[in-house]
Figure: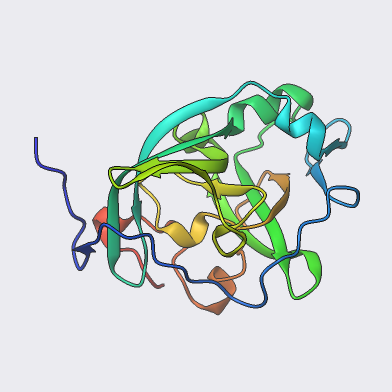
Length: 196
């Protein structure tokens, strides 16, 4: 069955590199992953603890707001639902912000997402990938090494935070980095929700 190309998109076999600011330089000793916000108790995981979590392999289509779409990229990573096992959420948590490094601030970048859409195996914190022309390889620093969030194909890829540093759990939706600059809160490529 032919893949559905969202409106205004073109297909590419490459994985273009786009990001704001400088590329984060990974330091395992200082890196950690924070789970906070509307939780009973905050949790901080070391890189070793994150990488010891159960792994998921999933094939995801990526749709960038700059108009390219890449089908059938296979990622290995940690599903977001594995992170949920470490925290007890307060009542009525419906949204998250996925944070990443930007401008020297570990929480300088963020992307808002509805939690209910991220509970399957296609919402991953990834560290390696492959496709029809590439064998398994680590994601590069420019793609978000050591860990990048890849959202389901129902979201534009700006929701795929690079150099991730944590998740904040929220009862109400809040703007992230690009949303503050006028991008769509919901970012569905099949509805062409690029801007507000």
